[in-house]
Length: 326
Image (tube, rainbow, N blue to C red; front, side, top):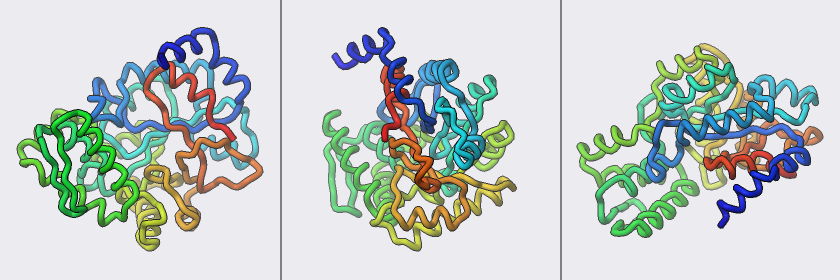
């Protein structure tokens, strides 16, 4: 029923009226784009054909600009209200293999926020590990001794419940707990099964530094997303947060031999302290996942709002025109 209502709303021009009433610059974010990603295991990646439909729509009704141009218009109070910035989080290999050719062929600017340790050592992102083990494996039970939990994986409902609980733990705990949980999850699998699962679900694999450099040479702006995929909430040690935010910038600048001027908070979490760290580290802008409007009368340099992009094209047309809201 919801799908029918959305389709009807779009078919009769509902998004047109939303767009006319909500003229404001927007920053959008995705993660990966791939040919045919598994919707459970590779949930961070949108299908290539669906992404192309979204870009077609954005090109028709909005002005797609770079992060640098967005920053310049922000500081000069020079927005037209039709601007859109394309951003992608984490640093998946498909950003180079699938995403870049699409945007390069259209000469469209975009920004990739990378987590430097994952690029350096090829380790999977925490939520990717959860989905790979919970939804991709043949396990019937999952042992997580570091948090004294066991999960039954007999049914899809149980698997979804386990993934949901583990995701909350990873997004609200200190980085040391996250690392221990990820090790426990991977220890449930034989190395051969793990390797097979990663080959089968390649959308979850991060880039290498050589691939990041290639992406940069193709015109992508490379921003920071912490050293580890650490959520910068109040449960984290402040010194850890400070080092994660600063060092990711320094590492990117060393590897790419160019300034790293933009930062995105993993999971969108930030505090007054992490905002200060972004400012003190010398980033021009820090990006959150809040859906509020950009306020030219209030400094938002460290918490610039972004909109998470839904995959369904009708939902996309509604959300991208409805948000951001004040």
